[in-house]
Structure formats: C-alpha cells, structure tokens
Amino acid sequence: MTKVRCFIWRAVLNGIPTACALQKRGINFNTINCSYCDLEREDTDHVLINCSMTAKVWYGIPQPQFGNLSDMVKFCSTWGQCLNKRKNLISICYGIAWLIWKARCDFIFNKIRISPNQLAGNIQSMVFTWIKHRIAVTPPNQTAETSEGSCDLN
Image 1 (cartoon, rainbow, N blue to C red):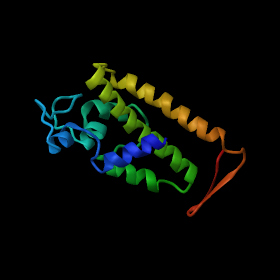
Image 2 (image 1 turned 60 degrees about the vertical axis):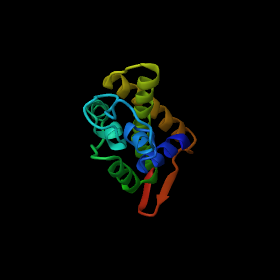
Image 3 (image 1 turned 135 degrees about the vertical axis):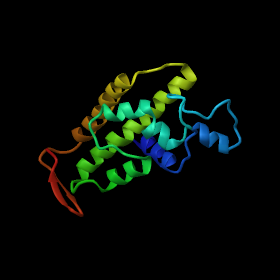
C-alpha cells in the first residue's frame, strides 16, 4: 500500500507523467490528448477521474462520485468516525486510482486495452485482497478508538 500512497501523493501534486505534465517538462508528443478517449487533454484529474473510460470504472465500483482527485483525497481522509472504515475507504479509492493508472500505462507501453468492466472487476478483486489481508492481522473483537469515537472492527 506504500507504493499506492506514494502514487496518490505524486498525483495530487500533478507529479505523475501525464501527457500535459510531460509537455510542461519540455517533452513533446504528437498530441497531449488522453490515451483512453483521445478527446480531452490528459492531465491528472482527467485520466484518473473524469475521462469517459475511467468514469465508467468508478461508476462500476459502488462509492461516491468525485469531480477531481483532491476531492477524493479530502473525502477519504475525513469520512466517518471509524478509523478502520476510513482506512478501508482510502484503500478502495486510492487502489482504484492506482490501478487505473497501471491500466493506462499497460495500454500506452504494452498495447494492452482492457474494458472498463474488466478493469472494475480487477480493481474489486485487488482491493478486496488488500482489505482482507489488513483485517486478517487485526485481533478479533477489538475496538478501534479514534479522536471522533470508536467502532467495532467485526
């Protein structure tokens, strides 16, 4: 999960190599349009949240809808009273964004195109595994205390 958090941190700071970011660094392409839809400029918010392809992925996984990456990060960090539930939500949202980025890179560099439904299914499996492994190391019937209150972990 550390790799995913690092990716989100870089993405929020517009530090991931989208076409727009690379152009700002002096690397020129034939187009700076999105690799998925080819309709909009490929910036961080577009490729991870707003692109028609990635919007279908987000729509295929039950969760709130966001207008940009900063809104998603803010929502995840302040959601709910239960710290463990918040951590699970962070795992889900950050995992979605990271796996969308990985699919984009597979498309660009390996010419592997995956449908939004396939990607949503892959994301659900991967994030479920992350959460399952986190819960597996938590002792049963433990209560997590937070600054806002407590919650049962079971």
